[in-house]
Image (cartoon, rainbow, N blue to C red; front, side):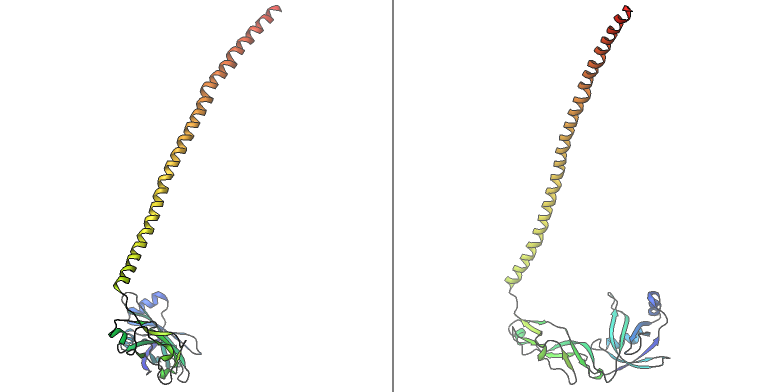
Length: 275
């Protein structure tokens, strides 16, 4: 991989407010992670960085980072991560990872296909990408921007495995060699697609209806049960109150007060006359 020159400047503005001001001035916030030095906040020209990414095959970019007024003005670094705006796609932040020319590094490299598979061309098969990126290890100058795989020989049911990919000179492919990377699958029939669509459509509404019915039954049952309880309780209470308060109280009062008082008075008067 050929390195590209990129100018950078020490960054003073930090946090979200600082990053907004920086982007408004036409620069991007960035960070470089050193091999032996602590991480350093930088800023780079936004247009220059956008053009660099736009003209690269992938975001694996090797740069000669020139930092202004720095004790180490020249650094070899890999673009480790680029943060984009989720809607506009504009670059928001860049992470660089400093590397040494004589030390191997491990990165993920994009995988592309070359040619048209026989199984797709003559039998109507479907080419499937199992992996879109693979892990490789090499010196910075030997790192490939992407790896191309020829799929023209593939029939339906066949695949290219990780161990079958020919790596460029000086590059080691890391991972399980038996893992399929690209395969050609048999096409689905119209009947299979229709059956799957019918099953998916039938399953979802059925579950919703069952839940709805249960809810409606519960809602109907609850008021009916409450009404029955309320009527029964009210009837019992009314009967009990009527029995206790009205008839019983009147009878007891009439029985206790009137006759007893009259009897006491009659008994007291004769006794006083004898004296």
